Image 1 (cartoon, rainbow, N blue to C red):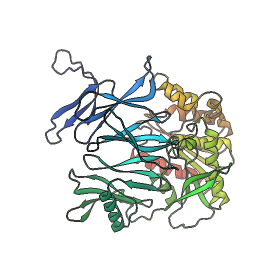
Image 2: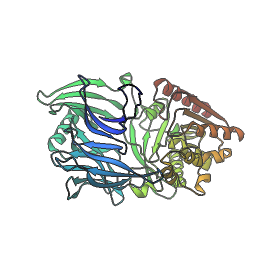
Image 3: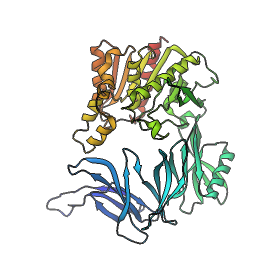
Image 4: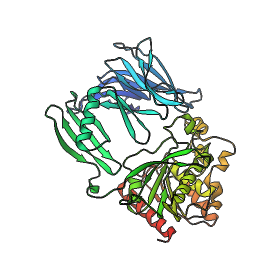
Length: 497
């Protein structure tokens, strides 16, 4: 396990320690005895082992002389059987340039990682010797290849995955490919993965789930061929009919087809004139994927059609789709979100008088900004932990080492004013409901407070609900229940339902 060491000055005792930085310890879980594998290093931010107890790769951030983070990690590696570190290369996290190591294969003596090919991430291997021989393992012409597939305690690399409409797996180990295909057929579950295994890989922890099934974990014994249920994910939903999720595309204003997922209320294979919600994802360096989603499933269960657009500015589709990181190219991203809403009404799926937008983080930003760009489309706006002021977002990082990185990501110039919902609160005509946790270190609660103040000053309808002890993810069952119920009640009230 990696462990962050901090200096501990117990004056006059034998407990003091000057050790500082990230180290690696081996813990005996029976006796809790500790064996130090890597001494604490104040410069290190990442270690990668070979699955056999030997650390082979270390990541160190490149820092400006003034202490500012550059967004670049410098990677070192150890040749087989050696202790000295040698240069592997850099990876620029801001621009996605370079080789990003993810895992080490002990037997092949290679590092697997991601590097861009034709503007999209592909899987490469690099020989961990002085040759540093690089080889393309797998690439796609349409989407990023991200999602290394490991198996077992030693994290043996057996494949990689990518997402088009649904997630697809490419296996390097024929026996694992055959096994997963057999299990998927036996369980009638096309979406299946091996989550873990015993050291000898004879007992497997298998997960199977779909869009309308949160999933089940099974234990499979490869010797006896016995398959036993281990635990049911979200067992409270057993017996509850959930909604199916359909991958679709719709045209944006410039004719580009936008990939998205449409979730209709359970029992509605076709839909006409439904109340509907557009649900843009967070990030913006993220994307929605096909599968079970508790947020969209809740709204679908309450009778709404839900559209989740992977607007331009989403990750996973390459540089040309990611554009300028979502904030700087916000007119394109927000235009795609609004096009999704118009497509819902044009197709007759949504009642135009009962159309809402709900978003979390960047999705909350998109919800507010969409209501500003065209105030006539949405009749209710729900924003959870939203960014509302781009200049304030940058200033919140002023005294942190990542200030320059965040500034570059958010942008500068006219976009700072034009792309800030709080600066144009007077244009929003729909009622707004905001949620935020005060411990949020991703997006300060002051962003929501500022939006609420600006909306109130403009005479708009706005309610802000906060929690004193929760962060950006509101990872608390009671808080999430409150958020879901309150948002549903708010939207229904706005729709006159």
